[in-house]
Image (cartoon, rainbow, N blue to C red; front, side, top):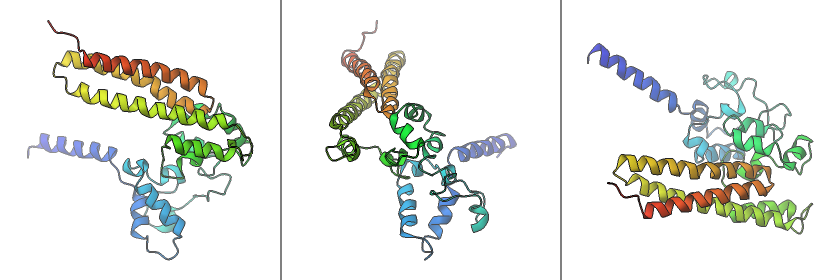
Length: 254
């Protein structure tokens, strides 16, 4: 192999490695999963991470818990880590939204505007955190029925603040989010089949214009005041339907 090719191959390897780094923390924990000192909760936590979007995208333990991911020695690796019950811990339920915001900025900005966030910051146990709906590590995306059930724990007939319309609105709007996403997924499949590059690029631009208000709606939903979410979803639905109609009747080429 020539020197030039060797340098290029090395650069490609380094670049690829930078974008696909496994979690060394998880590797060590999996290797020691039989340790009797490891609690059942710790094992389930690790398994939940492994099957989550976090695990699939190599978002390692240190991103949320801290510690030294470069060390395989027990004490240095866990240096400066704090239990979640410690008010200074990045995974304490009060601090968790800011920790998650390292990657999920949009939802965090919206969540800060919510009454839920006010309760959380005030130390009120009724104030939900990210883990309340999404799980501690699994990054769950709730179904419409699951979000309704979660809302009803506080806002149902037997909750501390009965507001049954909250769960109905959340369920309906989340169902619409998923329906629009399905429409855009179908549209994306059809767009990829278009052989004419100029026409395909035109449809790709329209697809992106339809996706923008959908993303905004998902983020606005974290305010838990659904007027903004509904408005963005209406626009997303209009654009998605118009896109599908145009895909069914593509413009003629001269």
